[in-house]
Image 1 (cartoon, rainbow, N blue to C red):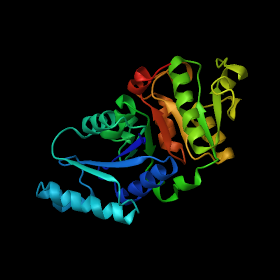
Image 2 (cartoon, rainbow, N blue to C red):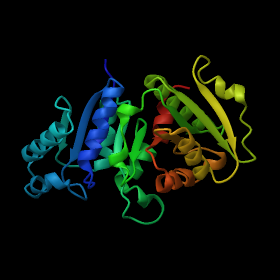
Image 3 (cartoon, rainbow, N blue to C red):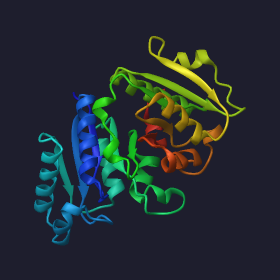
Image 4 (cartoon, rainbow, N blue to C red):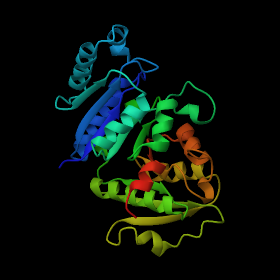
Length: 274
């Protein structure tokens, strides 16, 4: 069975770009694409404004068809869900599809804490059943998944169980892309050993780098130096990542990172095999 990527469309201004990113990523990972929009969400997709005003599922599907054609993804599955909480509906869809990945946009016009993500993205990043790729506002046009093959990914590692699971997921993605992985530990309390990191995938290109300073800034600095296409982190953990809900490092990354952030939600980490 081919893996599935679910893309949640929640009304961000760059909806077309989000569909393009998800479509290209599905091609690179040899996955099927499933686009999902929930009618009655807090903010309507620009191209679906009329559909939502009339509560018309048919019109919404027509708009999704146009987005798929524009993104060169005519075979993508489209779902318009008439009622329900958008985050919950997206999570259920991802679970039922056994999705390998959820792609969502974030909102940059809200202030403070987890509101940077918006309520839907924030909840998915904490509770989705699979990894969530969050696309920061303003970065969409520069993201080219078709150029990710053979590239090195960056993951934050703190030595916790959640951190290990996040690193393993990032390693699996790096292997699918035919690239490598750098596990970054930050701070004087990070006692992770090089051979422990290498054990993630004994035959793979996995490296370990120790840094000192602000964790989010250091992760972005390493990613920038390697021109990494994304940074992978867990939404909960210990050590440098200790904080409520998403954690301060994740929130800071979403504010400052110049590339997508792959978040391993606590729910997906609990469900995944060790």
